[in-house]
Length: 211
Image (cartoon, rainbow, N blue to C red):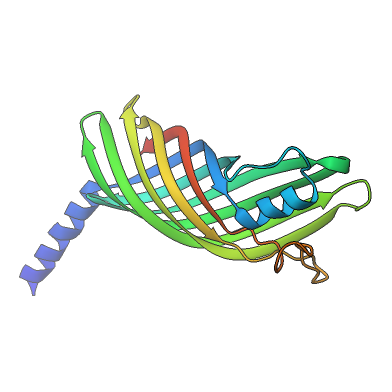
């Protein structure tokens, strides 16, 4: 019994010795393909200023991770923001809150590290829409999303690293509705309601701390 207790203690101590906490803050730029929303805006409000397949959106992100090399487990919170202006004083803006549970494989060397990983989590959408004839209307929806990411970090000090990451995302977000249950209607020229499901590719820069 003492032998097994000793072995367990050694394994626990070894795991603690090689475990680390990682914290990251970043600012990103996403290129987002959101077909249902794009068609809705182009048909109804954009006139001559038609939207292309991919639109840029800003993303703010933070992440906390627990590492036992070569694996790392993390929780990320990201916020994507975008807005559109169309004919007749039309305005639309949306935010998507994207928490994700992440898993990485880590390759750490002197002065830098590389990671590749994936994650999944819920998605929370908020939309605001208005123009000269429509009072500001707010919609919301909840969906899910998946993400694949590769990133690299270069050491700046004993605990701080410069961070750069690239990622691919797919977010499945159904048609949003108001608190009264009214959907954002697509109109006669489109089938169904407006969905915010999207495929996106992004790049982010930030600072990472390994404690």
